Structures are given as C-alpha cells and as structure tokens.
Image (tube, rainbow, N blue to C red; front, side, top):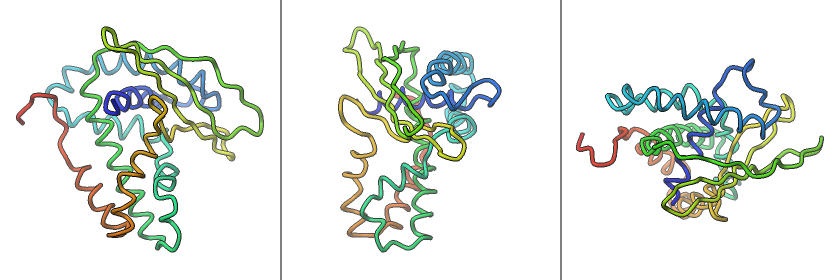
Length: 213
C-alpha cells in the first residue's frame, strides 16, 4: 500500500519542479492541480530513457522534486524526541542521509508508474494564519480499489511558498510510520547509525520489477 501511495506522492511532488514563472507556489491547491498533468506527461515521454537507465529517475527526482519537498522539516519531525540532547552535526548528517534516502525511494516507486488517474478533493480553506494544510487526493486504480490520500504541505513564513513534507494514506502518516520503524534503533544505536543505514539504502540501484540487473 505505502509503495503505491509513495508512487503517487513522488509523481505529484515531482511536478513541483517547474520554473517559478510557470507555477505559483504560494497557492498550494492550484499548484498541485496544475502540475499533475505535466508530471505524468513528462514521465510518459521519457520512458525510453528511463527503461534504458532506471537510475536516471534519481537525477529527475534530484533536479525536479527535491527543491520543492521540505525534507529538512520532515527529517526533524521524524527524529522527534530524539532531537533532545543530540549533537547538531549528527542531526545534520541524519537530515542529509534522509534526503538521499527519499531521492532513491521516490525514484524506485516511480518505476511503477502506469498512468494512474487522480482526482483532487475540495480546496482547503487558507487564511493569513494558516501554515499547514492537507490536500486530499483519490487514486483511481481500477480494477483495484481506489486509494485515498492526503498530502501535507507547510508554508514558509518568509517566502509564502508551500512545500510538501508528509503523506497520509488511509489514515496512516508516512512520517509517523517511519518514525515508529526507526525510533528504537535511534535510541539504541544513535542517530548516526540510522543515518548510515539510510545512506546505504540510498545507494541502491533503481530496478524495475522482475529485473535481474
């Protein structure tokens, strides 16, 4: 379930890498709607290159997705209580490794892209004090059941622009699930041990299902 949901998160957020003159990042709902079609078109148009070199997806994610994902904020939220007493350099190393891990994770699940249709829910209400919103999306995955998601976005108070930092799939936060998965290891072995593990995962080559390469 999470791999499929992460696929859609990657594809939608990938499209945030448009030039500033093409998209207004201060309007998160419009932003996500407008960029979705362009994202899927790009993936479809570059399938030949992707099939020849799946690792090219890492390049695409690095260049187009990550500038518009608040990976630092997500990493800090993931660490949660483990931030207390932690060395600043250890936290920065974890954040860097987590970013690399996200790049590989997004690139890997994008190999599952088959042109799924998406539908957006109602536009969330936003006022001057709003800093975090959720944008609801339904994945039309016929003949399988549809998948209900909510993308969490956070506003930068200085620039007024929004970036994605989490996804909730069928009521389960991706960040919270990863926090539960890594929390014990962080407590037992330390932040750097988990950062090293994340970096190893980030170095994994991208493979299509069934590929032996």
